[in-house]
Length: 86
Image 1: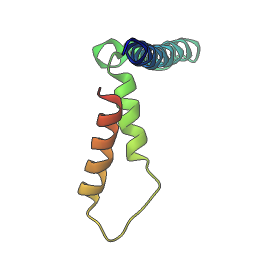
Image 2: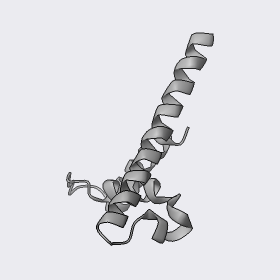
Image 3: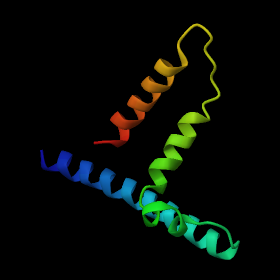
């Protein structure tokens, strides 16, 4: 049980570290390239990793012609939230 708790905490900390390093990278690139970085976007860039994830979901290359696009994107968004929302 303790090993499972340590494993879960490790995964959570690694995922958060990746999100913050991505935020830091975008901030540094925004400063060096003189463009809008996460600090100049809404809420001081806190929501930037979530917005990037939604943008990647929207760039999905798989096109299915026999289903509703709303349901298709809804299921993809639900899958994203189930994986990263815990």
